[in-house]
Image (cartoon, rainbow over all chains, first blue to last red; front, side, top):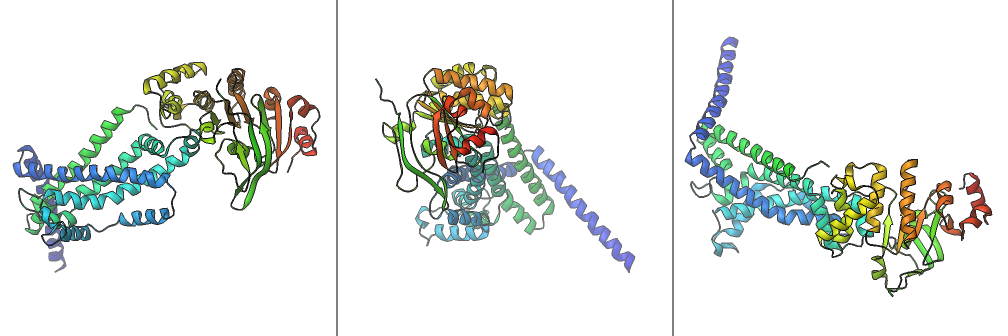
Length: 250
Length: 239
């Protein structure tokens, strides 16, 4: 009995290993043959997340910086809220955006539901607090360092913010990349507002979810490896680019 | 003739923070020329006094600071060198050019004038280095160049040589004296009595947030009026 059980477990384990191996091989095959569907959904993943990161950074980086520089009555409260919003559950964000964009909702007339734009909107809501919060942490340290000098030099508030954004650009890049990391792997919100429609709103994460549901593990894994590869590639690319741009390190 | 921002009249200025009086009440006049050295034990209020004069500390209570021109305009004609120089995450050249760039000078002109200043303080070779990799002495010289580039009428220095060795201190003092000879009013704090003797035209002795003496240097070192100053000069611990 015990031996048979052990045998079954071994069989199960090797089956699992086979799945992963098959997934890797499938991933290799899909990439090497320039599989049209794979390229399409990968590009859509990138399009949605990169756009969302760009928009979120445009809002979140100056916001984080402004919160570091500006003193006002509810500052602590705003920062605490921002930090709490970092943990916003994507599914709930998806649900709310869904309700807002649905035909009966306030923004229904734009007909955005189940389009990449809807997915971008949902991701912007998820990513902005994260990016703003990390940016705020980074800029706060830099501001503590620069404070006396910038006050002494009689700079305007906007000059201070511009200086901090520029001199803190490395740290801010990290904030944006953290946003990218969260966005590219996110599935809950874009599944709800995008609907995972083939050739329209299907991205890597929603495709993985779908293939797993169908029991198509090797394809799901293959897409998973492509997703991981993509995330690593974008990070490496941006780090390389930013390093060649500025020599020296600080 | 452009109207000078000096003399500065200080009347009953008090600096309080969290209910604690750090300085004052101080009533004094900062004349339009000279090299004043602010001395006193740690915590006497040297830094607070310099920051107050520079407009970085709010005056509590009814006291006032009166420049000869409106305060907002006077701010542009002052500069401050901090005890530990604040290096921006930029090249040495851009650090020196920064005050010009934030005050309407084009990038190109600002950089060329910054290059002249780096030459003058002996840092021309380090122009393209990140300021954060410079040594302590180099940083303080850079900070001096950055402070002087907008040709301030008055320059405040808060123990600029506290972290420098002998050679760096000598170089720094030479640059400071040159700026003074070119007409910059200098107010500098130190607790190095030797440095005070080398540089001072007049000495402000501060203790417990009060200016106890404000006398010409020769007179101060020969016969200090207060017992605290006498003890301080003798090397006793003044509390």
